[in-house]
Image (cartoon, rainbow over the protein chains, first blue to last red):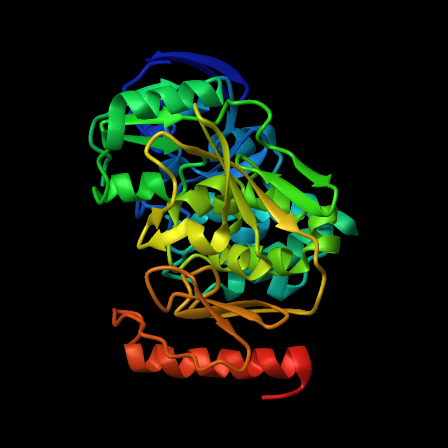
Amino acid sequence: MKIALTVNGEAVRAEVEPRLHLGDFLREHLSLTGTHLGCEHGVCGACTIRIDGALARACLVLAVQADGCRVETIEGLSDSGEIADLQKAFHERNALQCGYCTPGMLIAAQDLLLRESNPDRETIREHLSGNYCRCTGYHAIVDAIVTTANGRSG
Amino acid sequence: MKAPAFDYVRATTVAEVCALLAEHGPDARILAGGQSLLPAMNLRLASPSVLIDIGRISGLDAIEMRGDRLRIGALVRHQTVLRDGLVARHVPLLTEALRHVAHPAIRARGTIGGNLAHADPASELPACMVALQAVMLADSPRGTRRIAAEYFFTGLFQTALAPDEMLTAVDIPLTGGSWFFEEIARRSGDYAIVGLAALGSRLAFFSVGDRPVLRQAGEALALDPPDDLQATAAMRVHLAGVLRDRALLALGGRI
């Protein structure tokens, strides 16, 4: 099936099988490998992206469903500078070790920070509850998001 | 962890969906937000031969007051309901319940109609609809049928929908009254081990059987929940009693 969508601001046209999910489309067809695939059934959050500005699991959206949509991945958010401060805070606070969950964490965290300028730690943890990190224990991730929120509002 | 191959049709009207359902029979499944169906397909627990995508059908994504009822269209997403002022003011039970449905990224895609038609006995919303005495609207070539929530959920992932019927909206009566919602889960966003949605004296338990289980306050619970990896049946019976006691305290100060 033919699809046409925007990925990180660039128009993309492709012919895909209906069974192809958006995570595989981004990784295999567009070589945007920052979208990680962990569980592929919506539990781990490693494949978190934005579709038309809203959070989504790339493994739980078919590529054909994204026809006509505006898709943003970690590559887009990085290149635009939108989350440069958040990435810097993650780095400085050691909020990642292996890095597998990090793209999803960053996108989920940015989604919260766009709606709430000063979320408390409990709110942050709740918003990230669908993003698993098996390395850090989350404390440093929450620290980095608090630091970013303070920096943006200060 | 990839879905098996299937044919994909993007429907533009409800009538087209009903015709496709009639044409393809049980091999076809409706795709709305896909947040339950696609994981089941990726795990190969489901392998429909045709997916009918209803995501682009217009007119099914509104939340509106209809006299003494609140109507929620089938394609309204969980996140939209969670943030909706009308819902928060008139059906606060639903707002509270939605905070417990999965995670933000899932709530941003998953739809109310998809959740209800999926009829997962561990899901919060079917129990809420039973407690709220909501009415499901099902469209088919024969017209629109209204089905009380209590009779809509007929078994494990089973509903009263006919093979060519599509759930298009849910009507929630604005009866007011005190409400209670709580669920016990291992982690935030996980499926509940046991949960309870209550309005007045109507206690609707979830995750304790093959569908929402309605009990009146004061009535014996007499539950027969499943044993699974999350909890034994005995633990579920105990926890349901705990939630019942908490609800009665919150609602009336009596146990």
